[in-house]
Image (cartoon, rainbow, N blue to C red; front, side, top):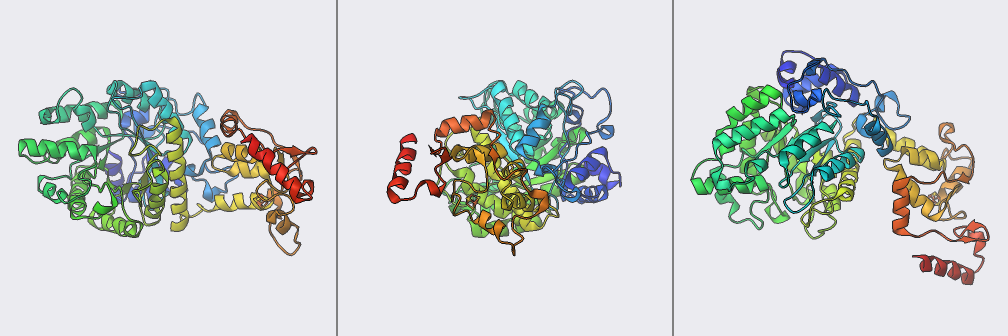
Length: 547
Ligand code: SF4
């Protein structure tokens, strides 16, 4: 029985309880949202067991226990203990626990999570070897970076190397749901024109049996949609969409994924794999956004959502891509109407096309607006988008950009308890409690390194303004203000040596290779050291020399 079928019969599964615990809501609410189709829990029964692609041997997926670890940021109140609000340090500690979510045969098993617009916004990270770069070990390392820096799900989009081995390794090391685009494996060693129905179904079955939690299936691109692509500036930019378009034109037949939809659904139901109905005609540039090709496919996807649900299979819908900022909220609304509120899983969207090398930023701006307007999951974009294959550090940059987008969206949507994290960090900041501020920061290691780069002392100011100009310090001193006076957030001492940075912080500091000079035993940002302009210039010159 799938999560959807269980929810429809009124059953609350172990996975629904786990999702409820992680979202600070009642299990009945999760069950009702899943039954309604407004939430999905991508959880292949083999990944739930951690059975390394074999049939589970011990407990069934519906009877499995999960660690009773309180989620949430450090010191979170009970109503703000969202698992998605954990810091990088907390995530890393959990991942390093040898016995955390150990699978029957695999090193790890799935910790179920939900995707829906009435719970916290989720982030997906894409990784995958290409024919020209990377391999299984490098992809498993990227998975670990993605999990540590905030990914809630991960897609293996490998198109090179040993795809089956790489996919199994990723599933076996992952506690987050893994998605794939099965058509990529179907054309390894053959031309797209030679793809047969039999090959499609066999590959779907193979990947479902490996434990993949959700499949991107581009069943919504129909033959009759292809003429609508003609006027576009960038044609079809989805790899799956372009391959299937070529197949349809070569054979003069309908999209085989559409034709085989019921057979594919039957396989997915058996393992409880969730549909991520692919947007093969998503716009690849602002000029193509919200055009008739995109909307025609969306209408087909709306029909496929109903067919998937009727088959007992959970479904979410993928969305654009590249969209001007003023069209994003409209796109979210249209999807909700056409697709009966199936969770919308959007790629970005990028809000401008002229910043290659920085597309984690251009897209995070669009993703923030999408999250605010009801997107359920944001597919990250890295700085390497459009120009190359992301490496581990690009995965980190993309994840962090998207954690910002998702959390900002949750705050704007009024997800209860989401902003408590921000308010606690603000209290620590106003109290000039640096250790507490860095403990609460999502990536405290980076924040600590940037602080210590200038000033290796935790005291009542930082190098940004210096002692005399520190408005936080001045506000804290004003008796009439509440600023900085919360007793729960006071530092242990007014000044103390920084505890220093870890390996990653040290690497960051070496990379930047710049430390604020010390003058007469004190850091240069103390204005009492620079009583005149000449001395200030000397400090500035010393700084520049070091950079
Ligand atoms: S010196 Fe400036 S940036 Fe630093 S804590 Fe004070 S007000 Fe904030």
